[in-house]
Amino acid sequence: MQDDNVQLEDLLSHPGFKKWVLEGDASAEEYWRTWMEVHPQHRDMVLQARALLLKMQFSYEEPKDEEKEALLAKILQHDRTSLRETKPRRQWLGTFVRIAAIFIVGAGVWGIYQWRTTTPGEVSLVTRSNPPGQRAQFRLPDGSKVWLSVASQLTFPAKFSGDERWVELEGEAFFDVRHDTLRPFKVRSATLETTVLGTSFNVSSYPGQLLHAVSLVSGKVEVSYPGATAATLVVLAPQQQLEWDAEKETVQVRSFDQNKVLAWRSGTLAFEDADFLKVVSLLERWYGVSINYSKEPSVPWNVYGKFENESLKHVLDILALSKDFEYSMEDDQVFIDIP
Image 1 (cartoon, rainbow, N blue to C red):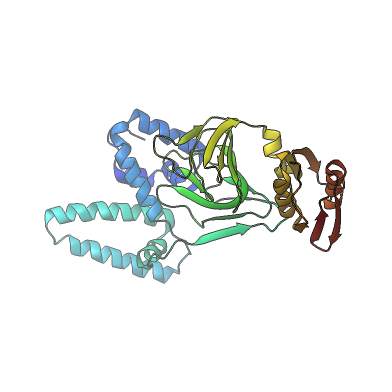
Image 2 (image 1 turned 120 degrees about the horizontal axis):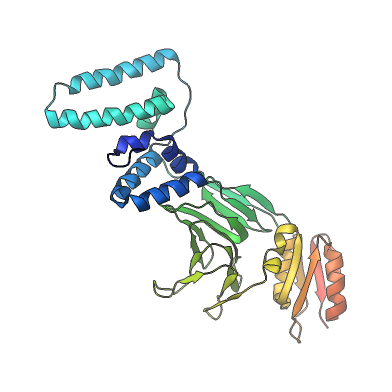
């Protein structure tokens, strides 16, 4: 691309630019980020072209020949009429027609007609949810990867648009986010909001949970929590974890064991200094059961251990032996008798 005299329509017709904006291509992302750094005087025009492309996304269906001819004739007639107007008006329309021609060549006349005559509606949302005991892996509209944990739900737009990519999480998920400098990725959960550009991290934030955590594997994230101000937002470095205590309303940043935090992705149930109520909630989510207990233990539990694809009975047998309690099972109900 000739950089000195680049125009808006040059960007709109550039294959690499369209691939970056519409497909989130990683190599194109690097090219255009560097290009804007080298040519800061064109940054506003790049953002304008990008916004225009995003607004002009549409579903394309190949029209019949007569439909193409009729619509093209209508556009040409509009152009001929504009020739009789004043010079400033002709100049503006000339630019418009050139931009319209770019999209006609790239996507077909019928696509432009569909976009211009369709009234925009509300954003279409997609919800992916897992029942207790099930996990799932899938991709978001921008190509980012998600591993959704047990008893968890993720809501997101069917197509990301605007200046940010956002999702809403109830439960736990691991994200491997596609890098996009101009569109940050935000995860909104029960009490935390995590903002990233391109990175991989884990969020654990179940409704009613006392401890909510963001664990960063690579890249950089900014985490907002209840009561946080612009000055107190936390920026995590790789291998750092932010933990928000909803009961005490305190924040703690520390290192974490990646193998333990991400063990759930491979079907491993991991306990890390888990108290009695934490053990109960994990078992309920992991195995899809309801656990009833006579009372809470008088002596605090501090449970450590990993169970790789083990049955609920096996886990309960180990816990009963180490914590000295009895239990019984009936369908999806577990009854624990604490002495």
